[in-house]
Length: 190
Image 1 (cartoon, rainbow, N blue to C red):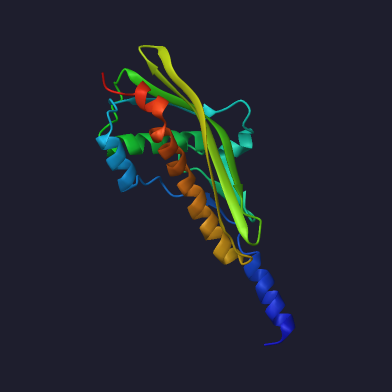
Image 2: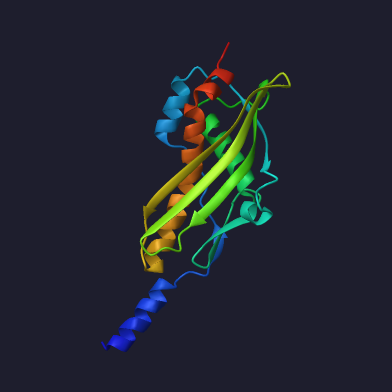
């Protein structure tokens, strides 16, 4: 194979992408479920999750990776995806009750995926979480999760890895919420 054809092949592989589709549904990890089950958390309801006023509307609708556009499977909104992910974790641990007096709401504040680099990629997802009980706010805090991973020049390798890593960002963010001592106190059973 000549060098010319090899360069064309490498360029085609590097640029593979240009697809649009939803990310996968949130899957609760066994570790998260066990942590929640063993916690002193009372059952909670989950209210509205919306994009923060400072978040560009487009960032709530999609993120891109090398020409591919990733969308949320939850009402075409990553705010809704975060809400659904939280409900999934709580339900899996037996801590979700839609009629509970403790309600968790939130705003998606950050939603970034940077996978254009040929050796490193990163993502950041952040949200402001609010817990109310009896209509009174008992927790109000912004939390974010950032993760960096090895990337590749070859798009056929880099794009699926970026999608996988980005999808896991919602689990990382919720794990940080569940580990927050102030959150634990706010949702503790009396």
